[in-house]
Image (cartoon, rainbow, N blue to C red; front, side):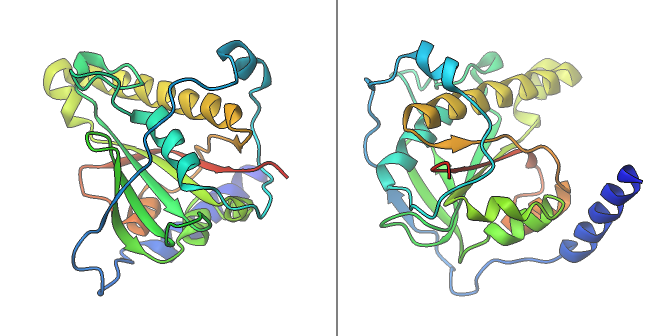
Length: 228
């Protein structure tokens, strides 16, 4: 019965969001927002962050700051040296991941969907308005995640890696997504925030909500906020 219920919910979510686009007609030009510089020396040791890391699904109403958002995005895919290497290892340094940030409650950052631009450590506005509820519905109606101030979505362009490694490159992409998610977990913990990785969602529904490009595939969803 549980399996049937999950499949039914998934079908409903797919129907609800199939073919729908949410891009604002007013947003004809993308807006770039420069993020605060990341901090390279925190107060929490890597050992303490590993020990304290837990999955969090209940969040308070406390907004995030732009500095916290900056640090989390840098931990996910930030540039770490002059060769443009990043915080997460990538097969062949091909970097197939794209990181989206769904913003609902961040100080000095309007609601909307943003794409992280690692090379300039900035956000580009993709969609206007709070899309947290739409993401939660696309994730099999997991509405608890709408309480998180932001929802991070990790997506991949497989072709960036498979062009060199063939079909096995997909495995490398999934490994990189795991590295990135763990970076976010540990960085969130060091900031006294909570997160959880969500894999249950309808792929096309998430793509439609965020208006992802055709070649991009969503791999993971991570709500982030202060634990309740």
